[in-house]
Amino acid sequence: MLFYRLSALNRRRILATFVGSAPSLTGATLADLVRIAKAEGWPDYFGTPRLASAAMGAQEFALSSQNVNAMALQILDGLDSRKIPRYADEMDPLNVVGENAELQHEQAVEKRELDWTGSKQTKSSNRAHPYSERR
Image 1: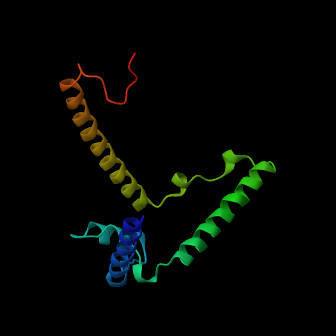
Image 2: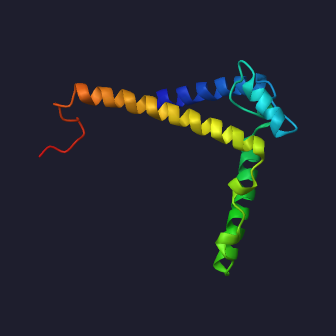
């Protein structure tokens, strides 16, 4: 237990050091964010890490929950859910490009993983999987 506490403390210190020195990566428009994301060495985040806090996350979660709860109550009160605009129907065209690029990336990763697991299965097809039921 002591090891866990020490390692958790070290992780928090490392994270605090990173967050305090991480550069702000913000954009006024989606086009700005796309430009930032395509830049060499992009660290895979947007925003201002030094301003992030648990309280800010809790506030955002509470607001999001209120919106979802309000929508659920409207549906229970008779709102036809088919008339609610869907996110994909209202997406910014630049967002669609990003979504398509992400989908293509995910499909490529999935294919690579399936190809790898398929090659491992053919080599060991005569052995039972260690977690499979034995009959």
